[in-house]
Length: 606
Image (cartoon, rainbow, N blue to C red; front, side, top):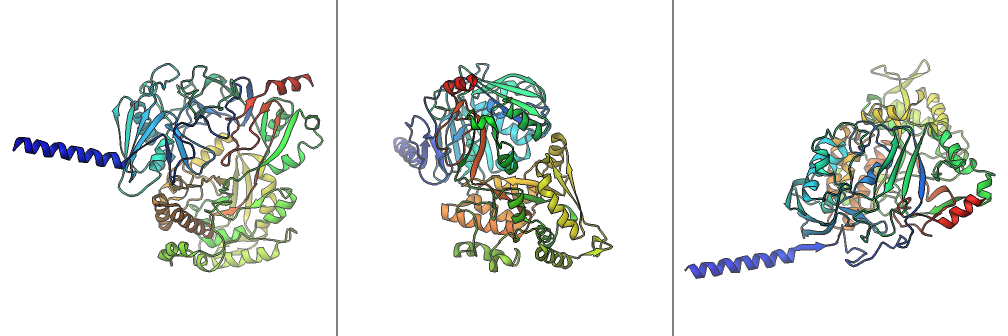
């Protein structure tokens, strides 16, 4: 019997191994749906110049100040560029919807059901002090970031059940029961910290000691709150990886801090720094008019069309405040914002009104719900705004004349329905007697001219509205603590929405200081849809769920929709090279740009 039992055991082991081999997928890349664009032997991404010279220095700008070199915690204000010190397990390509290729990891393994993933690290991966990067660093990073880091990490990685090392170079993440197809990719985005550096330091405290990293750059010098310079690591362990070819081309990257936007513009014009985004329409239209360096081609000013998905940008109500809890109030106040007049007179007609939280993509809702969307939304009829089923969402619109009396009459009617009436010239709640006082909190003066006409319209409704612009440190602290009435907010989106939506809209995030649920959204239906979105088994299902979620957010009137641009607008001193066409999902600045010695020489000679 013993030989027979032994034979059965061997057969059973062989069958198990064979079964495991058929369900475990070993790969150089992780993708949500379909196959990766780049095969295991790819040399570099298509959107980079693999022969770009590794030389030169670029100067950039930042506004305000900083007092912290640890970008992963709530305390303090992190220095610009401080994430460049760190590698992730994987890095995303910019010309695919959602695909990641190994960075610290040289190979990944996972079963068909994606219930776990193993990352096998490059044996040659090193910290800047020469110590090897190990699986223990990965486990340490995950536990440290989720326990002591910003709240985002706790929600982003909430579906991780266990994490443990298999050996020095392999680490395994197992996920909680349920379907979350993107969890392997979510873990792939984890930035890795050095355990031997942090284990005897207080991770949650601000620091001005340059942290240890394993990335392409390290801190060379800094003057707290005023400037910081990063230098390319000459012997960077990952410089020859396909994912890094043609990237990280500057020897040094320096950030100069300026008190405000006005000062920074003047500094740019004198050549104090090299590149400036011209997203502000006034700056684009007026601030470089008849500017000699542009006419002489010493400076380049250009708009580069893009195909980026556009998330929502606008004025977010803090619905945690009693006066904004009723969605009719939020809807009413939105009628006081005259976008058409603002776009023509203040934005120079450069912007498009946002009508979706996933605009410029197939994920955004439009018209009335499709059958696929209705199959989802019908489950929540009676718990979601009734207009979703009957009316296409469009933001309030005017004729652009500045005389938006019709919209203000609509606003007044909605306010009365919500229990607010004008008493002695002031908008008051009929039951509580609360006067509608609205403070717009700003971190810079950029929005002041935009809010001025809006404030006047609110005052015509009887609301007492003020604009308060504070310094960057106070602004960030108040945002973290949700201490505001209305702010100018934005939520960037990707073509594969998932775990990050918890941080944007979930009930839990609404009560978590430092989360990006700026509007205080707290709705069980939205919570359910986020989880369905994360668990979507295929692209059509993901699209339908996202559109359904989009409609509920829009009709919740949590945000007065702003606008977006369909091009990158920028100016830079003419001493750089870059690819003629950017990747679909990003400009790639300064990551894929390079110093052009010939151009720089011509610039200096003029």
